[in-house]
Amino acid sequence: RSSEHIRIVEVGPRDGLQNEKQSISLATKMQLIERLARTGLETIEAGSFVSPKWVPQMANSSEILQHILQSPPPSKIPITYQFLLPNIKGLDNFMTTYDSFNNSKSAEDSYPTPPNTPPAENTSSQDPNASSISPEQTPKIELSLFTAATESFTQKNTNCSIAESLKRFEPIMSRAKSLALPVRAYISVALGCPYEGPDTDPHRVAELAVSLLEMGADEISVGDTTGMGTAPKTAALLKVLKEAGVETKDLALHFHDTYGMALVNTVVALEHGVRTFDASVSGLGGCPYSPGATGNVATEDLVHLVNSLGASTGVDLEELSKVGEWISGELGRRNDANAGKAVLAR
Ligand code: HMG
Ligand code: MG
Image (cartoon, rainbow, N blue to C red):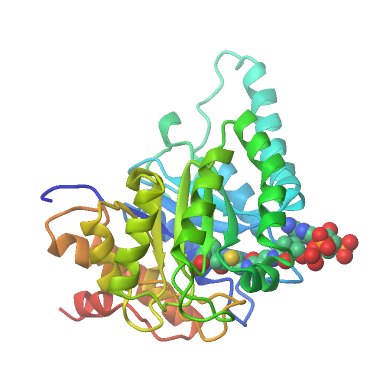
């Protein structure tokens, strides 16, 4: 698979930070996002519009969205920023910020610039060395919805049944379509559930994936929330998904590394044709409703794996490793990226 491109969705600023007990300042979150944007990552999940009572750490996601829209982090390539939301209330909160930005932008656009006006200052970053943002580098925004493959997890995570969660998505999906915002949909606990055990029914996952695609989802991220996935279970799930008609181009896999199996499972998924993977820098994270689950697979380790197979991610591993070391220091936690630590020790 030489020179084949593997797309990484960096979920550190959302999945990675949502479970941190200490409060993390907006400045630190924005610094993390800006640093990640410089590494060559093409998709970054930046926040979530969930209930602040349920997940206090994500409470300032409106400010993050506003910041990204007004002052897009400098990057060499256009970046897609994803925001997670569970219900119409989350969409309304998202829209308040999204609309106010677009309205102020169209008001600006509708006034012709008076002659002899000096060119606008580049306000895109505090960094004076940052290159200016060309129109094609305007950030792209995507929405992420989430449900799960077991009833118990869905209840604990979103206080509703699986069927109710799908019902909640219908109006969100149609509003997203009318705004031309792409939608990703997560299916959690696809390879094991903290409440129902390690044997999630792969047919249930496939059925949900098909429903979500039919409803209009542009991509399905299949989540091994608990890290209970193994190589045989991953292969079996991918076989069932294929039989159900789910194409690998519509799939992302989202591995947590609780049992150290994430990279093994990634290789299995690569062999089955999957080309999009979620990861978090330095292995940040854990799910608040999945007790004991550790972070996502470290992005540094995923990049190293892909490089070792002769494929590419477009990510500068050394730069990314520095970001992982920095954010681990900021949070006072262990850097869980093996490749990241090794690269920095060279
Ligand atoms: P609920 O308590 O049933 O909500 O929670 P409700 O509709 O009854 O409303 C109760 C109050 O919450 C009301 O306010 C609502 O306005 C407010 P009050 O009248 O009491 O003042 N509310 C909201 N506020 C802000 N944003 C909202 C929102 N919705 C209602 N969107 C709810 C239901 C879904 C809101 C709640 O269960 C929730 O927020 N859950 C999210 C949990 C979460 O974020 N989990 C982590 C993300 S999933 C994950 O990490 C897995 C993943 O990484 C993949 C993998 O690893 O598998 C994606
Ligand atoms: Mg997750």
